[in-house]
Each structure stands twice: as structure tokens, then as C-alpha cells.
Length: 218
Image (cartoon, rainbow, N blue to C red; front, side, top):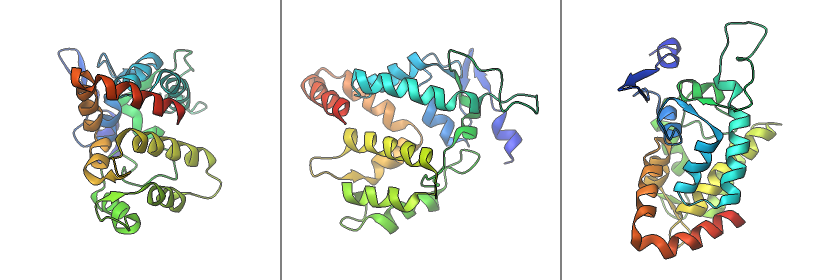
């Protein structure tokens, strides 16, 4: 599968954008495309974060920072003098081009075309899971982040830390472990859908308020 095939997959079904089957990174981001038009605006990023249990402050900051950081990178132009289309003050993220915004100092589980790399996923646990073979402790997670750091890639360091910190805070179990199946599900976005459904359950109301508070503080 070449890059031109993957980057031009703006398929539509009944007027809705459909992520490319091979581009798992598109599926990861598509959860935040709340109206499924292939564009993620800051208010949709905010709504997505709120729907999985993040507090108002974190959701607001995430919407602001993520869309500003990724918008221009996902909006390619035919003009050689510009990296992307003329900047939009609405900071839209084009889902079909999300692989263009992949940051450094990451796990390498997504390749340059947004595809899932099973060997890199398994390396997370073979290299860093010391206490339990299929889960990570907080210290092991921090060790992985440090091992993935590329020299002077400060933006990548911050992006990776923030992503994994939010995931760990929201999804660790009662023993402080982040499980392999949970991490796998976040890569294709299925975890987000599951969390949203769980939060919609009336039985989750009490736990929901506490978890939102924790994530705001984090």
C-alpha cells in the first residue's frame, strides 16, 4: 500500500467520512470527529475528551493545544512555498491526512502512513513490562517514555508524556496497572467508544465525577 493510496482515502458513506481500513491512526482520531464529516474542530475535540471522562479544564486545554498543533500539518497545499493551506482560525484537523501530523519520540506503533505495526506494539511490553508481562506500572510507563525520547525533540517529549499520562490516569486498574488490551484498544480508537458507552451508563455516575476530578488535577 503506497502513501498516495492511504493519504487520499476520503471515502464517504451516506455523506459521512469513513476511515481507511489500513490507516489505524485515522480510526484513532475519528472518534473526535463528532459529526463524521472528516474534519475535527476544537469544539469536537473538547466534546470527545469530555465524553471519555476528562474534566472541563483538561478538555479545554487539549482542544486548544491539539488543534493548533495539528491543524496546519493535516492541511496540505499544492503550493511549494507553503507547508499547508492558508491557516484557518478555526484550526480544523483533516482526518484523512492525520499521518502527516505524527510526532516524534513516540512508540513507533504507528508507521509513517498511520498503519499499526504489531512488532512495535509488542516491544512496549517485551522491553518495559517488568513486573507483569501484559501491563505497565507508572514507573515502567515513565521508563518507556524516556527510552523513546529523540534528542532535542521537546515537542515530541511533551506530546508523548501528555498522551500516556491521560491514558494512564483514566484507564489504570485498582492496582495501578495499565493493561495490554487497553493500550491496544486506544490505538484504533475502540477504547474511546467503550469509555463513552460506560460513562453513559447510570451506574457509572458516582465514579464518573471522581475520575473527572482526577484528570483535571493531572
